[in-house]
Image (cartoon, rainbow over all chains, first blue to last red; front, side):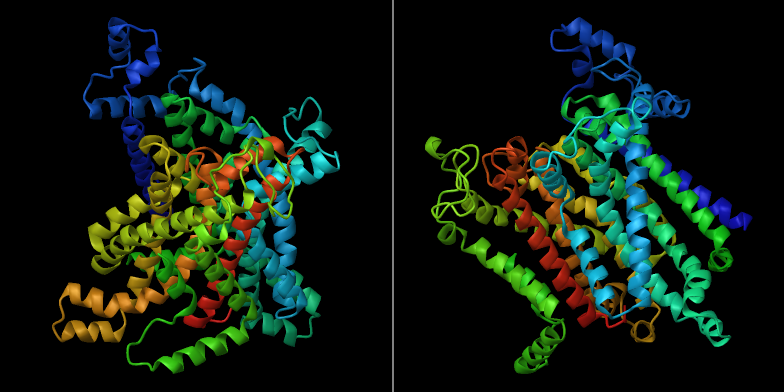
Length: 320
Length: 298
């Protein structure tokens, strides 16, 4: 068990190092002289030189990289060129908004996907199964930004029920906050629901054909009890893994959704940073996104091995 | 590119000896057993046809603006209405299929061209090389698809080609992982071991014994990734990072439509419906292909 934990954690550390190198090199490949951009358009040669000196941009690349990583580990990702705010501070303001959005969409996705997936598996090859599978296929095929536009068209423009855009912090007015978040959360949740539903159905079908389910039936348990007490719990384990892997898709979705509904979150921050060529911000935001993906999946894998001891043994067996 | 699409949707992995009519009969039987997949494949082919025949069926010039025709609702002359510059929306949707198809198919071809060799080498040689490739892949996967694509387009500059490259590179790690996994299980098979015992070299083993046996799984994955790539292109163009106006792309059309939702909602209907239909058809066809090539029952 300890071996597995150490190995899994070591792989994550290696991945994080590679990520930091990729981000660092990537930002340096963006055309343009960062010193010139930081100095602003009206700076003279001396001003640019001063910036280059101040940020050590003339140093060899490996030295610059190590300095950047050293600061990043201590929680200093530099300052935004545009707002002069620290990157960490900017992210700390924007991230909770996106986390609320992600949480709501997760609620919607799980609320739709798990009952639908279980129903489709239990009533396999019936109308219910076809409906659920069809809806899932539609969910992965619909472009989420178009779905967002259509929802605005229907609920905001036609019916006037919901505001099309804007953001109200939850502590100012929870109701207004929810009225503005419900459409983006639904849009973001749809694609996730489609993927989760498919996974729930598949793993539920697998579990339902397992021996212990047959045993449960043969000792006279009612179908409902078998499904609820024995099958669902076990079939949800792979679903949790998929959920971790879907975090990246959720992030991509947030970029687009926040753009459409004008939600001032992390996703919109990324697009703004890219369009304004705010390199330190781009660098910091991308590093945070990729690192959190690695950490979330590390946690998912570890909790997975706690839930299911066979994984640990399997992992140990593979090593030998 | 259209032949490859057609092949992906209708043909079986060609065994050169199979008689042609036999194959057609088998395809027809499959099509009858899975009508939804057959319809999906047919619609994909319809889009391919529309793409090739765009100059003849569009009816109007997709770039021609007319100040007298600004934001006119659908009519007999302009079945999908006109946009904010008085251009015919139907013509733009038809021409837009070219951009979407190209971006969708070429980006996945790129992902296959980069990902499959890497996965093949990692799975075949194992060891240090495998570790290096897989750690790189892990890192690669940690960047959300769209954020990676946005980053790459920022570095390379916005255009259709660069968006296609960015989407392709975003999809690559999936192919590395998939290929590696398939190679690991295939390379352990008796026939590969047998060929090795007979003195076959690595290159021959990989190209003649391993690759042909994993092609069908790769094709199934391609039918899953092409619709994702088509949507990704639309998203990049929508954000202004892909095809640049005035070129008719479904994503840029939706971007323009967003400002006129209350006065010209039809501008938003058609391009989105086109993306949805094409992506759904690919997915339906892909489902059928998966059953055809990989008969595990799910």
